[in-house]
Length: 192
Image 1: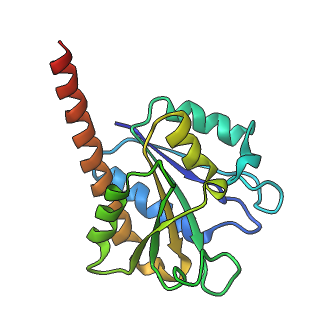
Image 2 (image 1 turned 90 degrees about the vertical axis):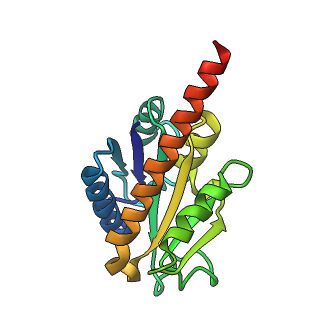
């Protein structure tokens, strides 16, 4: 099991500070759980090249992502938004601590809802449909590589919750991948 993690806006100006901080917490959780992961950080400022859109095609970022998705069991795309900037999802999501995005017709909605439910005890999560056009890496993962993708959008004002939220995501990913591996193994046995 290998997890590919992407942070398209990791370079300033205009970097997603919240996404970078959440990434640090998620990597720490994966390290504690011995979950192998590969991180790809965008190296272009958002204002020069928007790596969360199809403008990322044929870039080093997408080439690296494609190479990683070939061997990945799951993909996680992390972005952040702020209550006091233009970078928020919508008025309903602005007060959420974390938004788990659903790509229409691709995302396993039940999986996203299970992750959100695990964090309800200490955070305000939401599961919302997100635009495929603004989540290119996840669309590539789901549509081209048939690799499940988790779209995570964290509220930069909820940084104190990031370690606990990251732990919930890491545990859910470990459980999901384990279940999928068991299911694949059973299907292979039935074919023999």
